[in-house]
Amino acid sequence: MPTTATAAEADGHHPHPAADRRTFAIISHPDAGKTTLTERLLVQGGAVREAGEVKSRKSARTAVSDWMALEQQRGISVSSTVLAFDAEGVRFNLLDTPGHADFSEDTYRTLWAADAAVMVLDAAKGLEAQTRKLFAVARRRGLPILTFVNKMDRPALEPLGLLDEVAREMDLTPVPLTWPVGDGPDFAGVIDREARELVAFERDREASDTRPAPREPLEGDGPGWPAQLLAAARDDVALLDAEHGEPDPAEPVDREAFLAGRLTPVLFGSALGGFGVAELLQAVRTLAPAPRPQPTREGGVLPVDGSFVGQVFKVQANMNPRHRDRMAFVRVASGRFERGMSVTVARSGRRQQLKHAHQAFADERETADEALPGDIVGVVGAGELQVGDTLSPDGRVELAEIPTFAPERFVVVRNRASSTYKQFRAGVTQLDEEGVVHVLRRPEHGEREPILAGVGQLQFEVASHRLATEFGAEVTLEPAPWRLARIVDGEAAGALRGQRGVEVAQDRHGRWLALFDSEHALRWAQEDHPSVTFAPLGIVAE
Ligand code: G4P
Image (cartoon, rainbow, N blue to C red; front, side, top):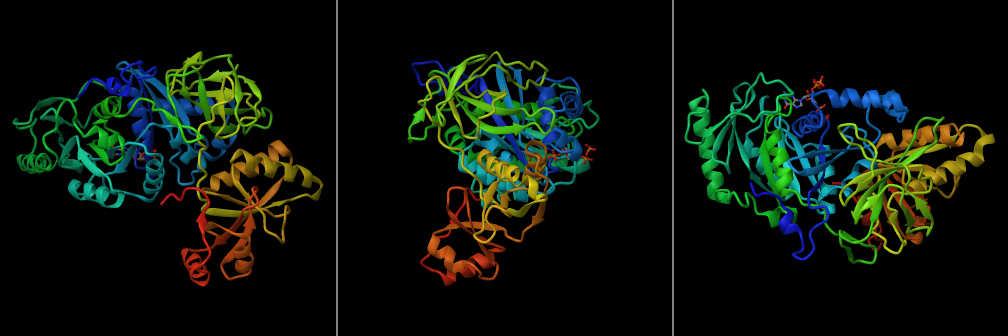
C-alpha cells in the first residue's frame, strides 16, 4: 500500500495542516454490522481493549451525564457519535451515523461532516433500503466510498453477483482489494490481490486479538483450505486481474476515480470475527482523503490552511429537563481551533466564546484543547448556534449551506392545553429554525395544527419531547398519510388544494408545498398540471 495520501494532498507548496486526518462515516442498513465493525475498528486502532466496551461504555456514560434520556428510554442512539482515535500516525475521526430503522436528518447531516464513507453490506443480503438512501446522500456529497462486505462467516451471496449489484444499482465500479475463499462454514479467508497472499480466517479468535491474520503466498495451499474453493477463488482473481489489471502496490486502485466517487474498493470480512478489519483501517488510512477545501456560500472554496473556520453540522439538545444545555457539533474546515477562542457566527454577526469544547476520544480524553481540519468538536452552551452556521474570527467567511433532506414522513402536531398555546407556538418555531423538523402550515389550520415533516419518526419524538420539557407544551402527534412533498407556486397550490390524496401547506419561508400520499398521486397531479414545476424540498435520498 502507498504510505499515505498526504503528499498528493498537499498543494506542493504548503504542507497540509491536517494531512494525517481521516474523517469518515460508516453507512449501512440496520443489522449489517455497523456497531460491531465500529467496535472492531476501535480495538484494531488500539483505542479500546475489549470488543463490547464501546456499547457498554456508551450506556455507562449516558447514565453518568444524563445526556440523552431519550436514548436511554428507547435504547437507541439519538445522536450521531464522533469517536477519535490515533493509529499508525493517523488521527481517525469516526462519525457514527445512527443505523436504527428510525433514523433522522442528523444521520444524513453527519455525512456532510465526513470526507469518506465505509459502506457495510451484509454478505447474505447485498444492497438494502437504508444503505441505498445513505449512499444516495453520500454520492450527492461527493464522498469517496469504500465497501466492506461483512458476515462472510455466514452463508453469503455469490461475490461476483454482489459486485454486479453494486455496479448496476449504484453506478460505481467495485474493485476488490481482497477476494473471499468460500463462505459460511466453509469461509477459509481471503486472497489479498495486491500482496498476492492468502489470508486465513481463524474462526475461534478472541475479539480483542489484533495480531495480523496468518498469511502465505498465493501459490500456497492455504492452511488446510479446501482445494476446490481455493481453485475457484484463484480463477475469480485471475478474472479480476484481467479486468482491472493486477493491483499496483503504489496505487492499488485508481485513486482519482475513487476520490471522484466513480470507483469503490471492496474488502470482504467478518466484523464479528475481527477479520478484514485491519485491512479496512489500512485502506481508510491510505486511500481516504485528508480534509479537502470546502465550498463556500459564494461559490468559491475555502483552503484548509487559513485561519480557523468551522461549521456546525448538528445541534444536540439535552433531553434532560434539568439541564437545558445543548451541544453544537462543529467540524473544523480550516486552520486551528483552540479552546477558549472567540469566534463570530456569520449568520448573526454575534461573537461567541468557545470555552467548553469537547472531543469524543474513544480512549476517554474528552477535552479538546485544539483541533485541526477534519476534527469535530462539541461546543457546550452554544445557545444560539444552528445547523449550517459558520464560525470564524471575523465572521466574513460563510461555508456552503448544509442542504435539507426531502421529508418522507409527516405528522400533525396538536397542543393539548390552550393555556400553553404561546409556548407551543414559540417551541414549534424554534424547532423549525434549528432544523429538528420541518414545520408546515395549512391555510385552514394555521398555527394551531401544524404539520411536522422529517425523514424519520425519531425526529417527531424528539420534537414532542422538547416541546414538553423545554417549552412546557404537551402535544399529541397524529400520523398523517402524506409521503412526498413538492414545492409549487401559489397558483398551483390553489389549484391542487382539495384534490384527492393531496394537501397544500406553507413552510416558514412562505413557500407552498404540495403533499402527496403516494407516487401515484404525485404523478396524477403532474399529468393534470403539466405546466407546473414540482420541485423536491431538499435532497431526495433515493
Ligand atoms: P448494526 O449496528 O449495523 O445494526 O449491526 P450490529 O453490529 O449490531 O450487528 C447486527 C448483528 O449481526 C449482531 O447480532 C452481530 O453480532 C451480528 N454480526 C455483525 N457482524 C457479524 C459478522 O461478521 N458475522 C456474523 N456471523 N454476525 C455478525 P445480534 O445477535 O443481533 O446481536 P448481538 O446479541 O450479537 O449483539
